Image (cartoon, rainbow, N blue to C red; front, side):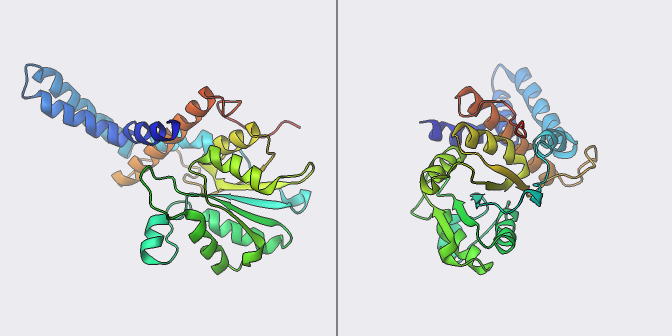
Length: 265
């Protein structure tokens, strides 16, 4: 039930979808005795869409997420394993075309390839099944494995977890699959904006990981005005979705902090 609600309500409450829905309600109300309210809703929807599309709002919401963890420090030595969270591979499109198809977050795959070369003894784990509410038998891990092999990682080095549907299941299923031993060091590779929630979930699952953030979405210029509406809307949607995820997972006890940060030594 939680999975279904997270997918349905999560889509509805994205700013772009919610504001478009608000505008549609306003148009409908124009034909009723609540026409004045309808006009107000339409104006509010347009103003807020413009704010989300062209203002620095998305960047300002993303910055606390992406800056929460510093780049990984390699001076401590080689890790025992590298966990790559799913998300970059479109499983159903890959199945349709018979080849890996990536979208946002492909940096996770490139980072896995680079780390695999740098640390030839580390185990490589990819965790990701299908996050779609109505999905086919296509699983992200199946095509991620093909992509990782294309990046030069031998198949025998890879452990593919193909059942998980979200980050919570990523942590649980990966821990059960690799059975990490005390003293082992595991890197967690995911997008920088997604790292706080991911680390919090793995900690709650009692799986100690070291953050290896990639796929940054913003730079040092936080207050620039967006010139392409789709870019601003996409960034705002992404940030709001992640903050909603942090709040929801904290309320459900799947993380111990609202905004998990670096481990305290």
